[in-house]
Structure formats: structure tokens, C-alpha cells
Amino acid sequence: MGLEIERRFLVGGPQWREQVRWSRQLQQGYLSRQADGFTLRVRTSRPITSGDCAAAAAQAWLTLKAPAPAFQGVPEGLVRQEFEYPIPLADAEALLALTALQLSKIRHGLALPGGDWVVDVFAGSNAPLVVAEVELTSADQALTVPAWCAQELTGQHAFSNAALAGCPFSTWSPEQRDPLLEVLQAWA
Image 1 (cartoon, rainbow, N blue to C red):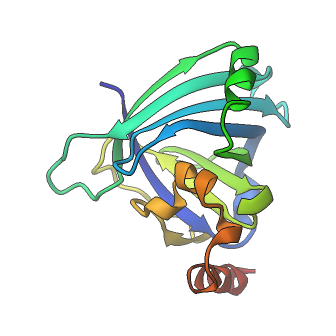
Image 2: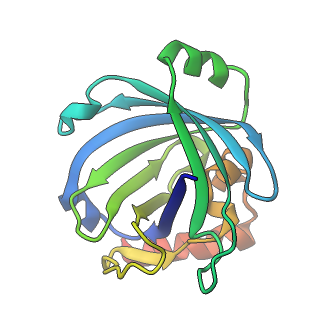
């Protein structure tokens, strides 16, 4: 079983930019998303910078994510099943045309210790959200969280990419959106 062990954070401030190694434009759409966390996603990825030689060409994947079996003492949303398969770019573009549940973002790979760190800068109706993710090797892995991580989002479904594709940040009520914008403004 493929497992994704990931923590997510709302980003405050630009300090993370000093750690950028590469950047890619991501477009992703959801062919299926269920309330229990099961999703079927298609994603295209195009280079913006050439810092990552292995990622120089446009690429595409089909990804299935599902809730993982319960692990004692592990916070909800930290561990999920993940099965990801490369597919031809033309197939991904055809699949994207089949769904309105889409989002766009620029993903920046970071040079930080303690896991595989990325920062996603959301575009369109999900701007101005900026979210950091770190993939870990184990659920109990020690992690030094950078100071620019303003608030942990791990397990908060409204911030999942699948949820943001269906209910973009710009459509949230002022009661939901304004406190987050205040956090971001405090870090500016």
C-alpha cells in the first residue's frame, strides 16, 4: 500500500522564497471526490524554472488518494493512501476537460531539512492562499517547522486541494475567510 505522510501549513510572509530550488505550474482536476476523503485526481506539471533537471519536461499523473487505516496516536489527515501513475500529457489534458473541479497553483520545491518541502501559491479563485506541505517518512518523525509557517492545516478538510477545487477560497463566507486573511496580513 502506498502511503502519503504529510503535514500542511498556512504560509505567512515571503521568507520561504530564499529556499526555492525549482518551480512548476500545476493544473489539477478531480474526476471523483467523496466526503470520506477518496479522490481521483489528474494533474499536469510544467516547468517554470530549470533548477530541477529531472523535472524539465511537462509531465502528467493520475492519482488516487483514500483514507488510510487508523494508526493509534496519529492525528487525522496526517496519513493517507496514495497511488500515483504517470500518464501521457495529452490524456491528462483530455481528462481535465471532463471536470469543472479544478485548481491552478505554482509549486515551489524548497531546500529544507527534515522532509520533502514544497510551497503552493494558489492562483485564480484560491488566491491569495499559500500553503506549505512537507512529506515525511513516518508519522512520528521529528520536524522543525519554519517560522514562516503561520498555522498548521493538517487534517483541515477545507484546505485540501480537492475541497478548494470544489469550494474555492474566494467563495468562502467572510466568517471563514477573514480570520485567515488577518493571519496573513499580520505576517506581511
